[in-house]
Length: 342
Image 1 (cartoon, one colour):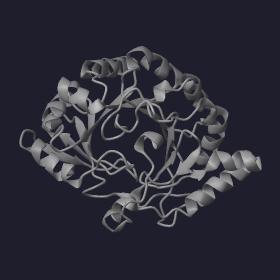
Image 2: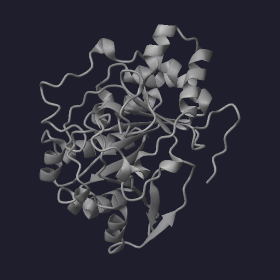
Image 3: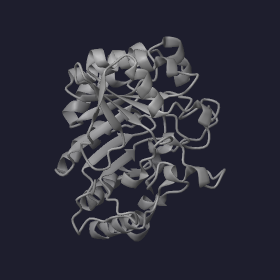
Image 4: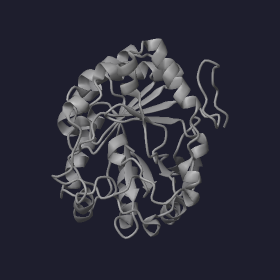
């Protein structure tokens, strides 16, 4: 699928436009999920960003404005856990000044949604993606590293739906850990009419003990589901869509597979990521990011100069790590998922 791209909007070196901006509001989280922020690494000795090191929300507004000019129409707020950042409702409300943002989403672990979902919807959030890796309390508690039970997350999902937010569920699948939960979660989401995304265990960062033997390929997940359900594929809704989408024939409920390991989709990647301290990453598996906020402050950039800087950075992008994973330099450090939100 060829992306429509006006001449004023940049393409990278592989002719990919920038359409999606993912913004980390904080590097802190109230969970210690083993595939993202394992407790033995992110313990009480771990140094998180100080308040004064976080990207200021007015600066973030200016950066968003530059990306919107470059063609971004989809914004996702991430973390860490984004609901730990003070001022998140005010920030979301301020996004109304960008009418070209057609989709404003948030990725969250759901623990704070029971109290906050209504306010988030009122502020202008369109939808949430909630992490739910198991329905079994023992498995879920072990994976999140804090012993929290899935019931609290299910309450958050219910609160989000009651508030009128769209809801999508993410499940990171690890062989020998929670792959026995594939069918239980699929049944639950189908019964509740929830869109589900199965995500292959990825080698993001340096501390999640990634092992290719623990990857359950998307094709295997699909085979397991097909033994119980009649399925059919769904065509991509837009250029750059990362999930291979399917639906159940009997009720049309949808699920998807995100196959960064077994079937990479780098060639259509339209995502940019901004860390909580204002660094721009053009790949989830990048080692370094460009200090965008540092450049803004040092050079006192006006909005036009900021736009040209962002457009220039994107136009020099050539990332395709997942496609060249096998030949990539071994041991090269990568940014942690908790720092740029996955």
